[in-house]
Image 1 (cartoon, helix red, strand yellow):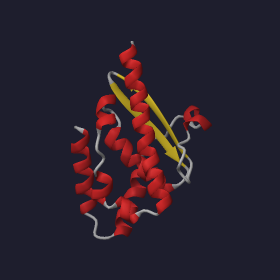
Image 2 (cartoon, rainbow, N blue to C red):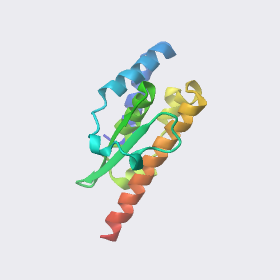
Image 3 (cartoon, rainbow, N blue to C red):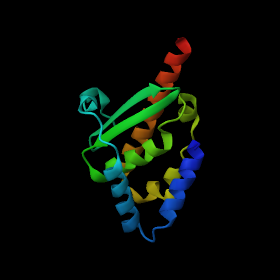
Image 4 (cartoon, rainbow, N blue to C red):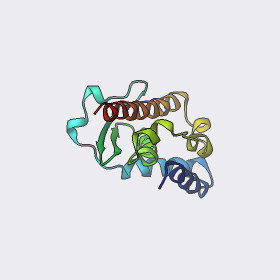
Length: 142
């Protein structure tokens, strides 16, 4: 699936929920389903700056695709990073760098998250795109 197809799928899933309490429960559930990150990646250099909660993010490059792994010490934040991983992981670096992540607004996250969570979400997206740019540069150099 393309990044946009995954975003559209996510938007459709959120439309099934009537109110924001149900949507928050869905975000929390997504966080619970996030695969556990290897303990070796839960180190200071993998912490995302700009998040109030602790969020560790690691990127691998395999078979032309960037694979993201993450964890957080806060349940909603873990759900948010899980959503972004679902959208961006397993795509080519150039696709990730060029992606317009419209699902954030279409799902209503920007208007329903606190300012600190919203800033944290933007920091996660920015960090994932920076990892993709770094991988893209490294691949081109080889």
